[in-house]
Length: 240
Image (cartoon, rainbow, N blue to C red; front, side, top):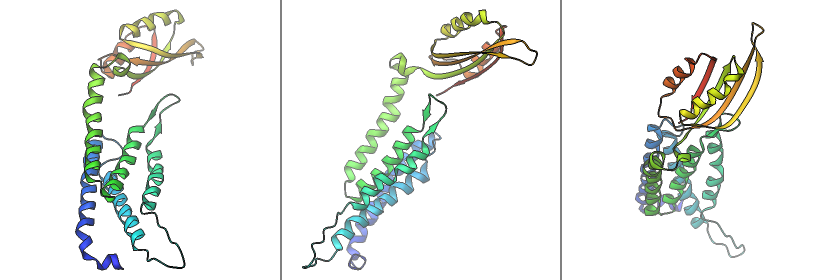
């Protein structure tokens, strides 16, 4: 009760909570703009309550009364350590596996961990460090990453693409591959399977995984593929 009675501490605690909230909103807005799972509300809740738990952990450790018969030692950041491990459950929920080769949500999971880190840092009194960390992360996400996507090596500039094409004539496979190469699509993996349609006719299913440098929109590329006479059906997806 000593801490509650000490009204002189309230302004500092409120400043910490407001600062943690403000820094988390910067991350939250960036995630909202990109339509990612962790948005404004999630980021604010994680960072603010992480800050609160850090404050409680530190102050509770200092308020333990000394005893002559027992050597009581309290870790001021005991709760903060549990935040770091506990936040992993939220991060794991943001990671999605699209198929055998593609995993998404890693940046979002890292942002969840980062929002908790902001709250802990501010709660422990590292205001400048927390603000600088937010600025550095946003600099990489908003400036460095887009610059590499536009001017970096081909491997970085390329997008992932997935195609499922059904051909009626297996002799046209090489022709299709040449067409994709002409569209700046490099084949990384190709699986071919023979199938039999309802009319008892043989066809061939080609499952492509490609690195695409094409500037064409998905719909435009789809129309070009459907116009090829030897293609019976096509399903494609280009990941951003």
